[in-house]
Amino acid sequence: MIMDRYPPIADHGLVGDLQTAALVSSRGVVDWFAAPRFDSPSVFAALLDHDRGGHFLFAPESENATCKQLYYPDTAVLVTRFMSPDGVGEVFDCMPPDRTGTPTDEHALIRGVRAVRGTVRFTLECRPRFDYGRATHRLDLRDGTATFRAPGVTAHLQGTFPLERDGTDVRGTVTLRAGEMAAAVFTVGGDQLAAPPPLTPDGAMDRFWDVVDFWHRWVRCSRYRGRWPGVVHRSAITLKLLTYAPTGAPVAAATMGLPEQVGGERNWDYRYTWVRDGSLSVRALLDLGFAEEAARFTRWMGDRLQAREGVDGEPLQIMYRVDGDPDVPEEILSHWEGYRGSYPVRLGNAAADQLQLDIYGEALYALSEGHDVSQGGSYHGWKNLARTLDRLADSWDRPDEGIWETRGGRKDFTFSRVMEWTAFDRGLRLAREQSRPADVPRWTAARDAILEQVMERGWSEKEQALVQHYGGEVLDASLLLIPRVGFLAPRTASWLSTLDAMDRTLVSDSLVYRYDPTASPDGLRGSEGTFSLCTFLYVDALALAGRTRPARYAFEKMQTYANHVGLFAEEIGPSGEQLGNFPQAFTHLSLIMAATTLDEALDRQRD
Figure 1 (cartoon, rainbow, N blue to C red):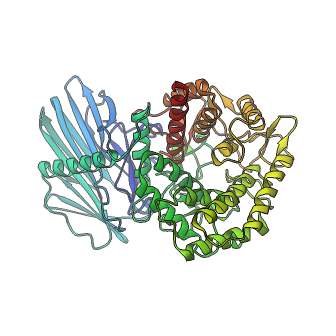
Figure 2: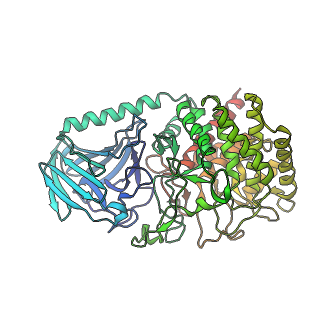
Figure 3: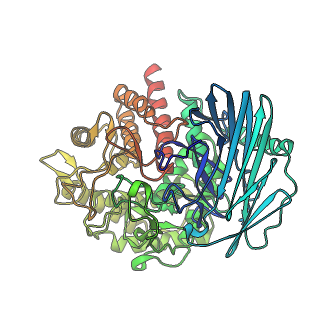
């Protein structure tokens, strides 16, 4: 089996254990895996540098095999099938999920192979490259176990067949007849990681079925009974895979450095928790019946209001590490060439230092939506929330960098104002529902002043629409959230006119651009594709507006851009290719939002 130098971004499935995750290509190659957490240094990263990133191949030797990949139904167990004239082989990949909610350094990737028909010869290549390929390692191979040691990390590779040394890496081959199977387990941990017990094919299968049972039990908790159970449940599983179990915080994506434009510089690290993304996930999870997950993030969000101040002395910053650490400095990995030459490869994210005032609305939206399942929070938690809104009441009228993390300077972004309105609106609602002390007159005055300002200064007579920032004429798809948060009713004339303007300028064959960077420079070179999140927000807004026919058609068309196992990256390129970090949680949560809204709208029509 020849390893593709850089397979398409979409040519992957995701497996994970709720603390970290790996990407497996349809050629049977693990070319992204970081441990012990999503945001930890990589172990395999051939997707960002084929020669220096490291990979783990386990696949048939045949160069002419047809490859097919699928998930075992309603699970995060990935099955890759190889069909050739000599035989049919399968590779299954999974990671035992965290059941304790306790951070651990030890993580296992289970890889099993079997021959389904004929005779199949499988090849294994395990070439780890620790610390983003910057650390050297030693190899100790004895008693059927390969041990890789690098500074601060140890990994064991076991196989049910002989392994052999290849420099400081490992190779192996095994020939199987129909019905026979073999397995390999790669376990990574800290300096003191103990050698695991001997591996047997039956033992590997027991662990495989245990993972299957875990996911089946979890999916059965879903109360979704709508028209698209397959895609909705796949998105729910993906959100679960991208959530760090010890804290309940979801990462924006499993990867770093994958380009929004191949060969361009828009290559960000998305392995952190954005207040915006996580907050919107609360409603999506509650709609599906996953109350525990919604409650855990709601509590995590509340804890951020009690933490130290962020950039510019703000009570919140836009992103954090999964444990709540606000420190995510950005650096460039200059020794990596990047995906298909997309340089620089960035580690960390300097956008954490930006001022984005919309996050207060998203945080209050999450706390309001998750109030019932999170037991409402403590009195001291409420005081922190109230102090945040008191401060915002004095400081809401400021320019900021806006939702899209542009690097072109601060402006009076309309969406930021809309979400500040949401912060006061939800704060007032929580104060009333919980009978909590609050400066109601002051919050009410701020809320009403924001509404009046947005409608006066954010409105373009030329476009007959609300626009990206005051004094401009550029449309912005972030404003598609307006009817969902209740800033304007979904069928009011001003909103329908804004929706029509977006349809004229941002929508291309049902796919939606965030904005036009040529008309509103964002401080970065190059272009980008349509934003999948925005496409699903467009469906959501159409459905809320009662435009169910175009909403349903757009939703169905969007499914054709999913990859072969139902996953979405951040963007869709000009030829339908997936671009950006993969898979993206924001896209999948907006899919769930769009599906549930569209289901409700179609049901009302039927009634």
